[in-house]
Amino acid sequence: MKRLSAIFVTTFLTIISASNGTDAAKKENELNPAEKWVVGRITAGEIANLSEQFPEQRDRKLSAKFVQDLLTGNLTGVEPHRNGVRIIGAVIVEPIDISNAQIPWEVSLDHCQFSNRAIFVRANFAGTVSFQNSMFEADANLTA
Image (tube, rainbow, N blue to C red; front, side, top):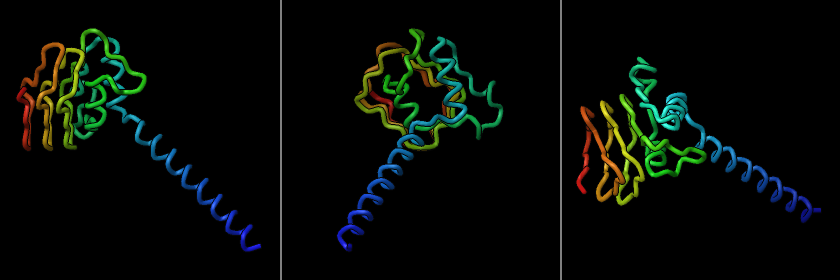
């Protein structure tokens, strides 16, 4: 009987653990409203001007993972248009590191606010890259 109880408890904990892992992965892949809007604009070949769409700065936050995955082409189910990634007015609070990444399109992150460190060392951009009027509040390394 004790052995049967131990098997039941182990099975139950395994199921709960797997369920929690799936929920965490699902939550990690969820995009906030600003990120969903950016995806729509970028895949249509349009400029994603977050300042116009989301007047409140707090609503213009993009996660560092979202930006990294978008720039490198690793955002599941998203293929940027040949016009590249053009974003205006984003707020990126987390540290962002795109060191040594291959960026296969043009990139404009203009009038954006980087609240934490931003590292783009040896990132290889296939096209032009612009950070025009962007603000870096912490360490920023944009050198090739």
